[in-house]
View 1: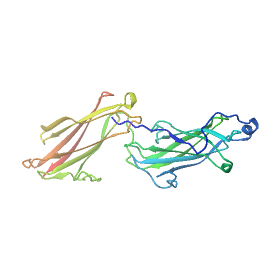
View 2: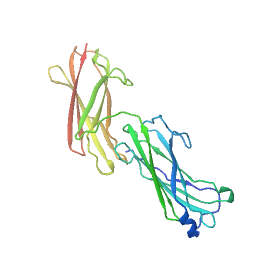
View 3: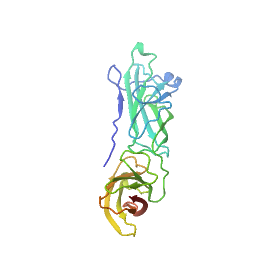
View 4: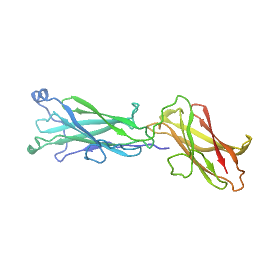
Length: 287
């Protein structure tokens, strides 16, 4: 089970403890609360990402500034900010972050602008594309609210969503870390065979629960089963954000006495939430 917890960020500037204070009506009416300068960066208070594209699992730092906020007759400030990031399909990747600013300003702070800071941890499996950050601030003294949004791009593996369970891009590799599949998967007896694929179209339950598995079978040239392993791997998890696909990877060590022939690899995926099954086959040769 992989569950992400995000703690709220709290900014407390130096000064006396916050206490409720009266606000002059004329001052409140003259102010226009607004938000400005939203920045997504690699590190806190860093430069904007610009053309940089974070990848799944990385942390994106975010900040914005509030202007036109109320200062009470005792120069007290009381603001509550929120921020939340959404994937390219409009799904939130984490709960709303709440950021508090409560302080008392001195005479020297007349040009001070409150800066709200937080961060977003990208899901460990995240689709690429443009991510949106929606943010707002509420002035707890004037009861006014201002909001805005910005975006940043994420790099990663793209797989179009599927409406039903599918095993996709079933390919053979020479080594575990290879990113390019073999065009002609030909091995020698005794070799290690690496296989990679993706499972999409599974259903999710409560709390984005995923319950999926896959079987592995190798068929000989005449169609008889050479080996079979049921539930070779399973994915059971809950998370705030439902991952868009399940990556599959495993290896097979060919026996040194294996006949030189063409064999068929069969992957059977099971979606226990949606009660679905999908099968994919691919051939490889042993010389």
